[in-house]
Image: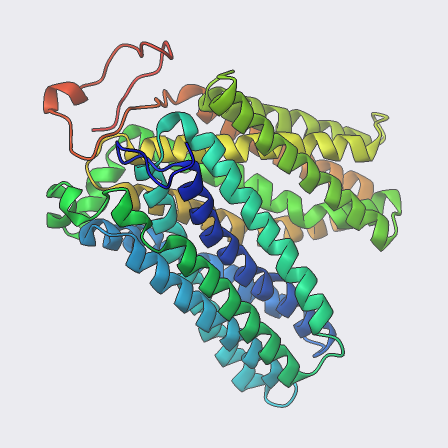
Length: 460
């Protein structure tokens, strides 16, 4: 099907790609704050790396507001205003962060205050738009297509990263404060325009407006809604899974290139190619899961979550042994295999996340997505800070970088293994969703699932 929406209201492939434009815009704007401005603060303005590190961590911590933001879109019954509002706030924060960065040349106190406010806006914008986008996707995409939909969105986000980084690198030289603000402003305007064009009319065409929402979604206040959702055993368990897996993943990304330089004495170009191997493997892992679950019907999202986490744990332990000299292993293929594993678990976990968010049909997709997104944001903030602190302490106590990285990578492997255990133990069902709540008798826990034996529905 190539139409935007099917007759049943389920989003078609064209509609999924249009939502992918929103995800691409989110990636395009956040990469400016996380990557470009990070580099400029440290190199051009000679700030300690700790300053952009804290600002980036702040933008993640602000996303602890995701449950509240998701609940807001649940109550209103429409996701589009929250997506567009989040995009505009993110764009304003991105341009504000660029302007604040230029202040560090002469007024560091004013620059730090302005940058703090800008990164708070960035975090709120990402939280509002990202949470509501995934809630809309969970409600509007049929279960068999969810893994493919997640793959499309995440590949488009990666494309947004790469495209924006390439364009900025071209137009930002020679560097100047005014040029930075102009380039950031043009990038934001382009990203927001593309995203609004992509989201326009999607929600109304898929019959997901407020008239189709259950009344219960809008009557409960935030605390009542949060308590109701948190009382669901699967929601709590999957939130813990998201936190553990993303904690390990975020720690890995920051340590990979320094690891290549410290232990294997790679040049900056060679270590960048090592990171490229990780990302290439991740993209291939995402595509593999999408084809397997949505096309060939091989395995279930839950089984791919488990396989991805446990495979990542195994590869990380192997790299740790290689670092310590206990195992001889070609580094680039091992890192590519690690990318395959992380890509597989990322897409499959997003697919399961959408299943859980929409399983009840009770209009609380935004709240559940907010919990999952909040756990991910806290994990990314903690992962960046804890991993760098852990490697510094390990190098000080253990003496050699090789052993220090081995210990930290082994710990990350244990985190992935723990996340895989949670995924194994959680009976996450691919439940059919409707626009109205099922009768109470239909929402009782079942002993099994006709297609996926042993899985039970425990939400509701």
